[in-house]
Length: 216
Image (tube, rainbow, N blue to C red; front, side, top):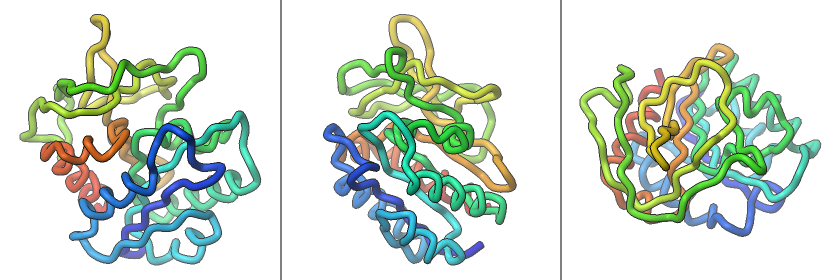
């Protein structure tokens, strides 16, 4: 496992019309770049060429299609190899939409966007609540306000323990969790629709703490 941070920023089949991934990837780079070398890539081939140098892989991607592509399969194998080597994966926001039909990806992240079930209330200033789950990423932090989308009714794998959650129509839904998968560590952060999300200092702190935990 290397020491660099690499952001996989979706383009083409790994993007959608609703998320400005180049802009949010640039903000992620601003937040995480202080920790050391950082690169942004947009293809599985480019990621494969760097993988041995990577300590933290950030995935900021999406999709507007119904099934996997050969590149998805390649990406899934790269992620499995990366985690098996002790790497740390940070998946943000629409990455639960990305690589549709690639079950290994959604099992790794811990959730997927299910058409006809998953939704989000209108983007607005909202309170994100700290749960009682103890974890180094969030210990000592509390609730905070952020202007963002709140993914609701994601299809979750068993055993998810949220560090942060939101409430919609009286029901709580997880927004951020951390887990160990396949020899490595994984954090999913459902926030990050656009640049406004990165204006919340608490969100920035969570991202930096997440990267630190993923490095072990």
